[in-house]
Length: 502
Image 1 (tube, one colour):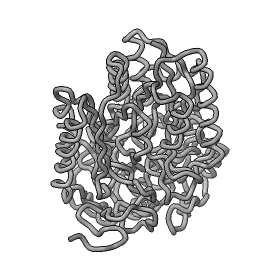
Image 2: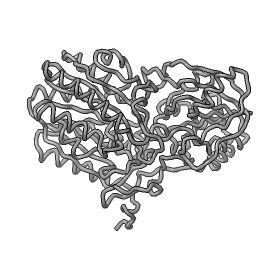
Image 3: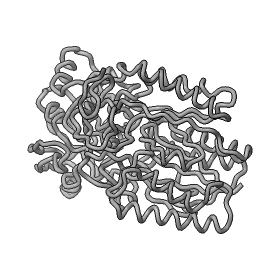
Image 4: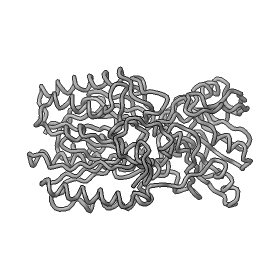
């Protein structure tokens, strides 16, 4: 069979200050730059990315791949109208040519939580336009992030939606493989499976959807067991909560030979989620309390501090500095933090050179929190401006680009500052600049959960810290306006727009 393939990835925090323009999708960061046509076929070899797993499995099954377009941008505020329309039109034009030449199916590597300046449902609109072009009969399989905010439109226009099952997302390529197997079954059987779709009416904090700890560990560990008999696929998306859209929140999707069977499994999974609702909350530390705890334990570390509310993987810009200020004031020996997004300081460090001293305001420049930059002197320890290989399982197979990057030092505190914002989820972001995380007492990372895949094995303990940023772990702090009625902003909490739970 001839299968057209493409992807358009963005996770949108509608409360974040910076938007994703076309240039954000063109550039390489922790994932490849925008890829088109035949270049796409050779851009993802060995990477932990869904389209990579799909291509490998589809080729193993003997299918021919017809490349369209693939791109991604670091999570941020809404995608600009210009970026969405340019990318969507390019993908549709390439798909139209592929349809003229003849294709048997389409696979798309999407995120599922894209919001645009002019669209509440980016993926839904893209799939609507695609289905209008292909007609109702072409099989379309889509892989989605575990944090997808799935809409009725999205599932209506796809034969099947398949989501990740791990957070940290170490199974992205594996999800692509499952999507290829699902498409193979769809092509073989010739009919679309029945689908049961359920929206769950409470929002889950990002850190509480980590599948390394309960209750998410318990639920996701059992999803495969639900795929029995003629149940073809079971997916649970926990949703991406900092998105002020009507369909924000968790979703259950079950595909089966018969509607009654799909409904039964979907209802069973939804009941389990509601039964465990109150457990979807995690402990948060104030910065001062976290550092005091580290001091009191007397243990050597490293203690990994997750600066979750300024996570670039959730729309933060990686430049809020309260946690860094607290570390500087703590007098702890040998601390490390990264990655601070500050192009001005990163470029100044490169101009000054290794061994030089610089004095520029650091961080707090993008409006992610109401705070002032850090004013102090820094010694430039090490510089880099070249891509480097990821060494951890989340970014496996990727070449990471921070642009101009610098390891800076003030007293016993080292900081990695970069020209590009990237979620700090791989030790190579430190080690390529000569900083070995395991040798520090405290390592603070701009991440929520993905860091655990690479840092938890070396951690004395992990502390999730609530420092200022545009991704509050407490959703009641976000000024939602568009959520559907009846959604609880926090597990077991108030119902939007503020009525108490009964």
